[in-house]
Amino acid sequence: MLDYVYRMNNKKDFLMAGKAGFVLGAMLLVSLTAPLTYADGLQVGVTVDPTVAVVAQDNYVYYPSYGVYYNSHRNQYAYQEHGAWVSRAAPHGVSIDMLRASPSVKMDFHDSPANHHAAMIQKYPKNWAPSRSNDAQGRSNDGRKDDSHEQK
Image 1: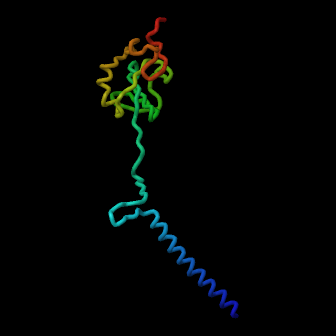
Image 2: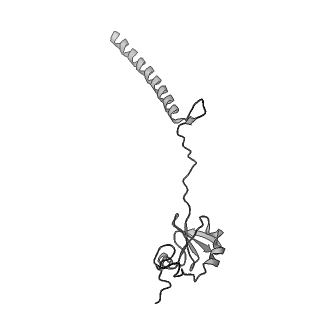
């Protein structure tokens, strides 16, 4: 009988220690994840703001022959369709290979092409091609081989 009472006391002690350990562990976890403030106002600790997102800038290459912009960050083509701007994985009415073979120019804006298109069609009309003085290597402004102005 004494053996039974001894075992029961050990179980109670274990349960009490388990509860106390759980409470102490929870307090330790809270104290480690919360920033610490000292008397002089210096705050130490790591806080994570889940609402902050990493944002990469949109970069565009314009294909004047087709009026199409390629967004290299999103891997999408932007162009006007029936008077509205659309973004799609592939341009409508021209193959990607054909588009990439045409002259192109890197854009220096990072917002919507719709905001700049009127100026771009003035600066780069449909028949635009890089000049030899600006492009001695025979490459378009996006770095690809451009044969559009070589003698055939």
